[in-house]
Length: 496
Image 1 (cartoon, rainbow, N blue to C red):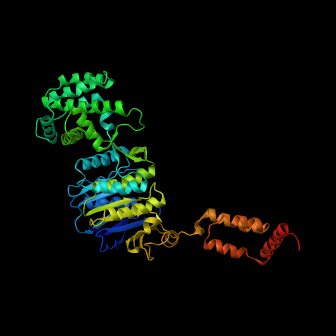
Image 2 (tube, helix red, strand yellow):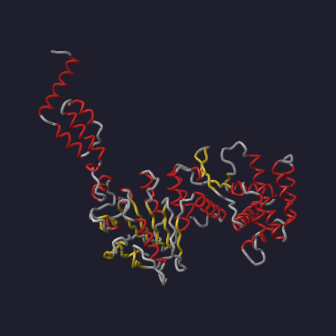
Image 3 (cartoon, rainbow, N blue to C red):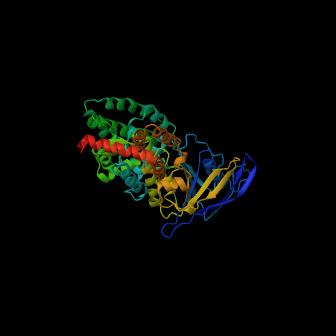
């Protein structure tokens, strides 16, 4: 699919502008389209994104609010709309649509990390049959300098409060067929309720540990539950929680990050405590994960990446690492073929190298999905990754009107300096600090030319520096330099 045109209406001036055409062209080796909106802060790039989304979501609705974007036209079929924004102000869009699947990111670390961690775990349990998360993790981990194969944090289940577990189970609706009931029945076939004695015996071997005492205390609440399925569900998750707590106390008490396992280690724990084979243990783990998920309990809540012996959870990432990681992982989780993907300032929190890598990965990891990626950016690294036909410049005129312009200069592969100058219209003459320093050099040269040369050496090479050097190269200043050279030669080599 491709967004073709839209009409921008300046609500402040009640003035409609001509139709804005998106001129992006895809290539033979990639069916995706890429468009970049550039413009200063305050021109309304985010509002334009929101207006495009609202206009599409409101298709067929009799109630359309007045927005800055009208008459959005696109070719092909939109299967999904994704709005990736990490703005500090998450404005909710008031339009609901049954026709389109819409997903908007939320810069909420807990929800993002939980979503990514759970999907990764599900794909590992399914032997990686769906490779999208695994492939993205491999590439992102490499750029961040981390192992590509993370381990799983089960802190969500081990730190679950007992009273919350009881409440969730008590509120279950088990009077009709459901995914939860199916999982409970599957688990019963593998481990009947009486098999709990195997686990209790293992706990008692640990000298009546605190885990065992807690287990016994909350096991007694079993009798207050009204149905056998409810009791079985409660006791199953209580057993898993106690088992993992017991294992942590016994083997991980000295570790910095506890509750961290790879999949094979978790399966091994299930084998050991439930006395079953590998495949049965894996199936039990899958069922327990599904049961916990149905109860909105985060069995898996984070991923840990290792660099040598050091481990780092996603929730311990820096803001830059987190933004780079989650932007791409969220896209991997949510993108489908024929998606309209709106990405608001991907450079937020990222260093220049990672901005460049982000665009490269965006193009490589999601290639040939017949999507249209529209990026709002102020980064020359983003601009230098697309063709000039892909760029729309949004500006404010002197009389405060919003203008849309197309780029005339070639941008793909252009240097940062040329993009800043040709596309963003930024030169050193706009750098107040540079101009003040340049004026200082000129002023200093009038009474101490040699000192001004020392100041001049602090400037990076540029056409402006060369111009300044030529300005200072008067005959009088050349004579000062000649005399200084002769003085140095006499001091070092003596007079002839």
